[in-house]
Amino acid sequence: MAVTKAQQAATKKFEDKNYDKVLLRLRKDTLSKETVQAAAKNAGESLNAYITGAISNRIKQESITDDNTDSTE
Image (cartoon, rainbow, N blue to C red):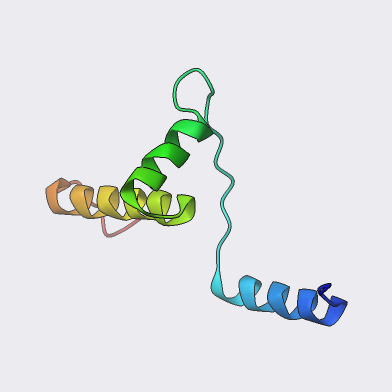
């Protein structure tokens, strides 16, 4: 069944309200998309879940060990 224009508009409205989109570029000679996809599959996660989980873990790790946070910025 084809997706109607109304459904496309509703999906876009929902995504615009609930998601931020970020373009991620990976150098093929250092960390390819295929490498990340394989790691995500091995972890039993989607590519998006794997990447956002990695970012979340990094933020948590740095917020615990980073005492250089300037609250005036």
